[in-house]
Image 1 (tube, rainbow, N blue to C red):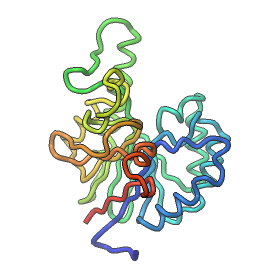
Image 2: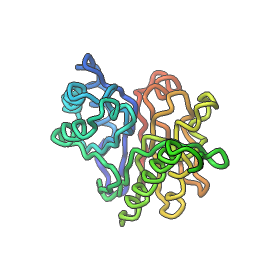
Image 3: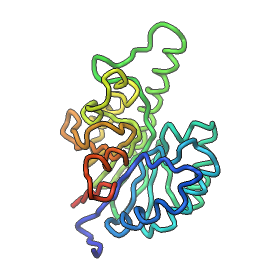
Length: 244
């Protein structure tokens, strides 16, 4: 489909969990996404253990993509303690990895950050008690502040937010209630109320819900690959959204 100045298409997917044996398994998917959209958005958990080897495999697979690629990392990409290695390899492969930054693709501004956990609404964890709890909440607050900083940089009429963790409870419904607090945080929704966007994409919740909305009505899409495979059988596991 030819590009249109009036319509920009984004293909989004997260939680692809590339491992050392994934070579050759994703090129077809990425080629399909590249043909279907003007840009590819990757919503974290790009690798399984965040190793250099896995990042190289992913970079090779992304060679099938002919459109711009924008990504954020996920919790799995931190597992080996060297997320900067993953970022460096992907950056050298042409991927724009956002961590509190913003970029522009085809006139659409994109703000991205990994995000963090902490729970939603009245069930949000507070910074009270043991130092470990306070550090946990501080991490959530820091990610929300980075997210707000990225959103504040957007100057385009059309805007997208890219996360790994969910900013709303609606897209994690279907997961065990006991782990809701580890799948996202309302602190990530608060910046979206001050700096509205046209769409939000995230992953992480493999058994969640495909779509929900923020308090102010912004659509939020859960594009975790395992969820897309289960909920949209027969369709390629990525979500295409058009912005007019």
